[in-house]
Image (cartoon, rainbow, N blue to C red; front, top):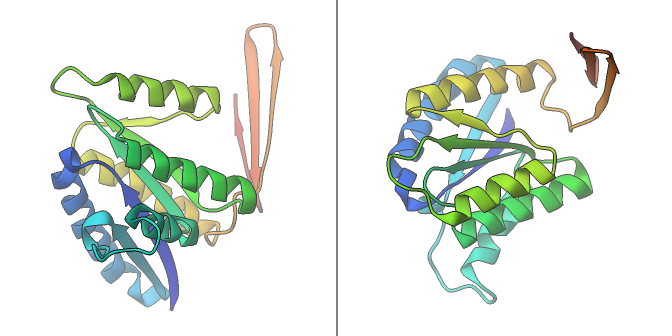
Length: 185
């Protein structure tokens, strides 16, 4: 059985979305059992609250470094621990081409905190396009498509060759990941 480790980072404000995501992961595990794939979801509620020799967050960060997929969810804010978890995932990604990193932002129902915009600007500076979602069903539909893409590519490391050619008003974008090539005009 191939185990794919997924770390889901978000603040307490998105507890319902995390719970629904966990339900969908369990359903996906049932569907993929015959393929020999098990999705192991780590959420902070399931991690130990015992004293760490350093900091509890360091224990979470170890789980992130061991993960195959890192997902960050945000709505009204990106707290300091969620931001640190992203930084840990991104550092691991730069060093090892893993984990695959996904960021989703739910439309806030109240005025967002400045940390949300600051984090979006950070992602933009990294050249990353975050995704948005409207509810937990929408989030799952989007992530499930990403899972299917990763499964087709056998969950291999991020090995992308990207090239954009612009001529006048037209651009052609090429992306090659392993044996898969995507051309978007």
